[in-house]
Image (cartoon, rainbow, N blue to C red; front, side):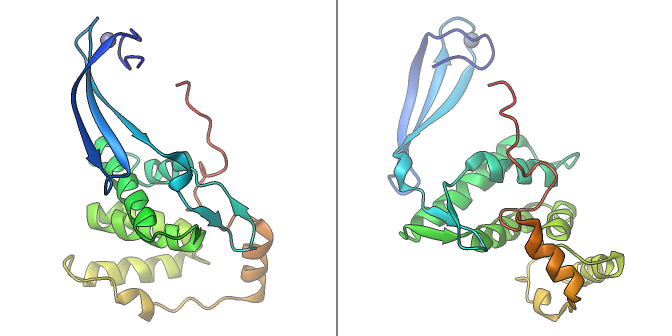
Amino acid sequence: MKCPRCHGIEDRVLDSRLVRDGRAIRRRRECLKCGHRFTTYEWVEETMPLVVKKDGRRELYSREKILAGVRKAFEKRPVSVQKQEELVDEVERFLLSRGEKEVSSQLIGEEVMNLIKGLDQVAYVRFASVYRQFRDLSDFIEELKALMETPVSQPYEREKKVKRPRSSAASKKASSSGKDDYPKLPLEEDPPLEGR
Ligand SMILES: [Zn+2]
């Protein structure tokens, strides 16, 4: 496996273990050229459920897509890339644990949002504001206020209380955009693969 640091292809496996309920193998590897240690995963690709979008179309699950949204939310926040990756791992564990062949994009978004909230509240508000398409600034501030008043330990009941009236213009906009699926963030549309 190509070393992410020196691009050497010789390595030795230090440790292998089953993760994600036995659906994946995690291997710690050490580059024989530069000594860098890195982790790889191996899993059966078909186990991820198909993603059902709001308009009923199905698409293949894309870890990259979710990761792009998560990265955007945590931009300039004190949350390590490692933690962000783990968050997406957890989303995947959740999706796999359902044992369904399909999953709604909405459910994925909610799960991502929940997990972000547990890590960083600024990132959460950032994510939620985009994901839920707040109609205007006052909605955003309402959400922010509610968040400040909610002790961190509480589950987010508060979200039901926040009223978000939808004008026909807003819902029209939402449905015609065609991208109300995954986390709606600027990077969401087919992010470039960043030269891996
Ligand atoms: Zn190396």
